[in-house]
Image (cartoon, rainbow over all chains, first blue to last red; front, side, top):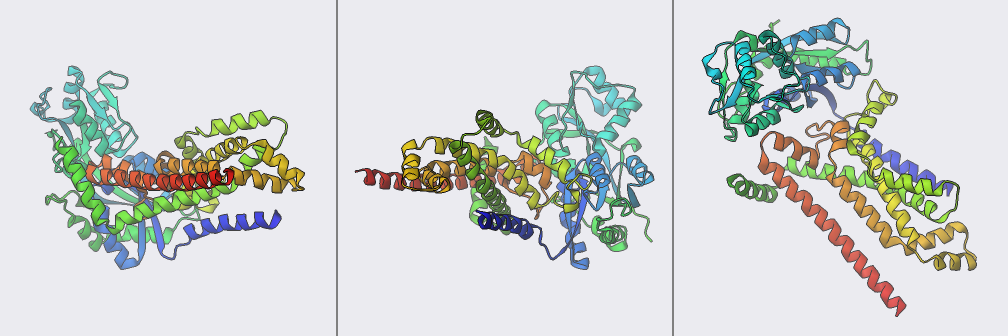
Length: 274
Length: 238
């Protein structure tokens, strides 16, 4: 029995080795559903990979989850959109080397029939107040993502606490799914413009933008590296190369040149060029 | 209705074209589930046999435990392994989180009780005369167990196939520990979840159909094996 057990063990261990063996350099970047699902990464990563030979694996989760993954050391870099949270995490020593990369904005979308007439108002907070007053369904991401954090700040500004209200639906899902739920429920929701443009053009959402252009809905994306002093195993050199490239002229041009199928520019680069 | 029709049309076109990305996803699914099944079988079948043939204290409790573990919720397994494998967890130094290895581990944990429990049932179903005869003819307990397992081989095979079905269909655990990274840990079920989120129902549907076809093929092979086995046995009885 002994030699057989030994052979079994070796076979099993070799399975893991086969899976983990990988010659190329890989960098793990935790990011948001908005950046991956919009197709931005599919556009810019091949350019970066060709230049440096570094393959970037993207984990698409909410901003909150992405930051937590970085804090635990389960990713090498994060690219997210909640500047306040990012700066706080840098201050706490979890991350280093944070840079602004690009922005887009949030918009409030609602059913085409516009039951609450949100279009009549100019500010996001006012719009939220109208929806709350009418008790019309509103779908929240409810997942600690950058969009969710932004939404909560608007509720705060509107001086409404929607938590627990029957019309306030917390989806706990990514942006696209949240839009889909809003569409099915004929509800309003807050979305980043990139995901909205990417999804509505597939022609399956019977919804329209009811409010846009409020400065309160500005959506800044930033990139930062996991602090190598806290997590010595991280691929810090590669993470820095990735960051440097994103904020370089070439990286910024790659972001600027990204357009969706219908020619919409989804992200506007705004890194401080070195 | 339009969505359903165009979905199926697109799905079949995708299956016919079968591009590299799709092929990679399918192969990874098969690889991860097959590796997990192999591990589960290596440990599960002997355990099922031991519990079935040996008499030991708390044997009933062991059987109940195995049966209960068959219903392990994949997300709980995923969460537990996530905590273990995270860089901040006890096994973090191995760097396994968000790799196919982590997915294999998660699926092994899920498949193991199924293989063990159903193998146990198969062994219990074998006529006790077989074992007694083997022992009387001078077989060691190990050789006798092999004889019983040989007799139960079709039941054991069913156990393995049942576990394979569960693994191929599983999404909760591998999504948590694999992270659904394109080109690295993205498999059929996680792609279906992602693409339906993104509204790409055609691709999701195509993958769903392929998944069903693979299950069908695997089960057809099993059926044929069982039938030919049953016929052989029938002949030997005649």
